[in-house]
Length: 296
Image (cartoon, rainbow, N blue to C red):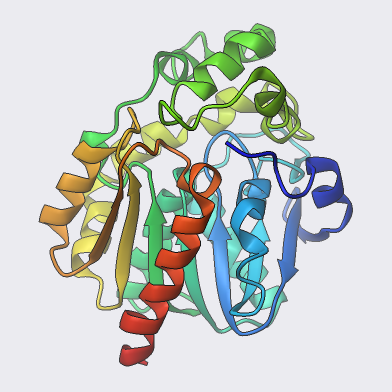
């Protein structure tokens, strides 16, 4: 894992904010071309995308929000936010930016948010049009999701207590375990992620954010169905060595959506955009050139 091309501090200093209900939502924007809405995963923030965003500025106008209660998006009332809340916020953000059509690139819990948006799109109830979706590793099919032990503990009744007192070193050790065996990094590199993990809402937010696992279980039929029923270009870029949603999850996706494009990255773990940014960028560009633009 290479050093981040831009520090988390610099990333947050050049973002913008958008007020939504009791939240001050942070987002980045930049580049030229069609809109690419980029949705990050648990437990980090939109900063995850800095490894690839610099290679996409000439191809897309990127909108990169920190989801509710994540990163720099202040959750004033410190309440749990559902996947539906996240989707509602994104609809409001697109309206705020006067955006009517988007491509989506999502990862982890961002995949789940994208599935809710896709379900609304399939129902013709979404306020903007989705032109394509690219997913990175995540729980697209909840029955195939394999959370690490720390995630399971955070989702338990002990979660709020654990979130407040878990040692940073222990958390980062668990975080490192989801990377590929040859793309993990040293302590110094991992420490870069801690400000993005903690965010402005502090450690307590970890126990609130993890509620997406229960949301997935309750809405499995809706969100898996959104993939199966989609009438637009889809692609999964999967790091095969991911213990959470690796090769086994890619197999399930391939069976569920045989018409979708599937890219398998051997030796790569849960964070393809960080572990293999060049491969992800190349796959995104080829997908848009060969599959998306032919359908427009």
